[in-house]
Image 1 (cartoon, one colour):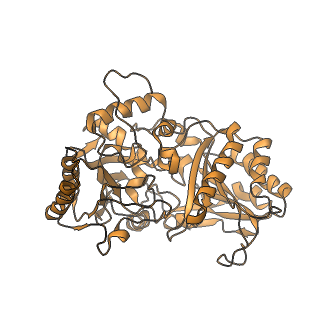
Image 2: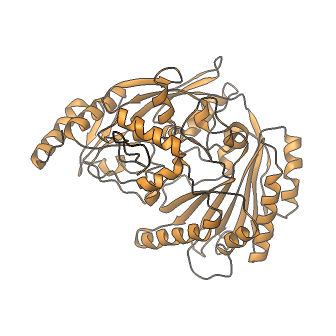
Length: 475
């Protein structure tokens, strides 16, 4: 029941503390702001209450409380992926749910919602095994898995969601359900790609790979002018087309300000950076990378490495950042696309914006149907674009405008699709969320939302509204 009386709301919120074994924090309490902050500082949460769950029972109690009080539920583990401010919500922090066990015989791991990938990498490596993680060891496991998970070895193995065996999820009725391909398979399908639309995922069982080492690293090319940048980028794109599925790669274009907080080697310079991960043997990996080395990188870290170091290739920031994030799925890029892209990092330009544009090469296993179907897919795209723009509070509006302008300039190569794990800012609006799924998958997700969360308890996210009775097409 939705309370309209503010006194009743306050009374209910006070009662919440009595139901929780962990911490319940209200605005003004010590630790409140820290508990609901995260890595992405451009999204500020102002929830009605924060529940720092000590166990699954706390999560279920908080969900039941919110449903009874008519308050929405927001969920956060590490804070890497917030897209919508959790204003007025019951904010469930799952960072204390830290179960971690590896079964080397089965080749699986059981993960609590509060873990980060760096921890899983270390635990799995003790048994010669590896999880399909992304580019940062700091990212939380559950938001990554429920968004599909785009691994740095994705062309070889596909999405991380392909390797999820089961999920423990607290649904809107406050019940804990274990879902898998044989147990509530529709919910299992929806939760892998639907993020937090269907409940609070508190644990997962995933398959691990017998992968001890890879060949990988970064090649960094400072560019003095647009012509040089176009040569490096065009050469990379031609090289990427010829690579086997064992080679996953990305290229990043950066233009950096002449700012004192940056290392001197980066100040006021533009770069094209190529990152590679090859899952075959070292000798073949070195041969495949040789054409990139022939382009004369200033920095070359490529070589054989333990899989535990795979996230060091990308050097993602470990501390909280104030950036504006956008994404898109692109088709194959031609010479005109190269010119548009390098114009964005033209070193002769004065002033901002200062974009970081990553193009992750897709294809291979990412474009094939998974063994355990889920709601995630590349929809045939050739590249995933990941745009990052510095967005200090006083320049947030300008950063959004600049990001829109970048995407508009690349519209000719935009497939119109997106990945559900990369929906930020106004990409989390329902009409844009549709782009993250095929039409059939979106309809199925909306129908399942009507089954499992008809009252939209879980709407502080990239929301998928429940399908209305009798509705057959997208509104």
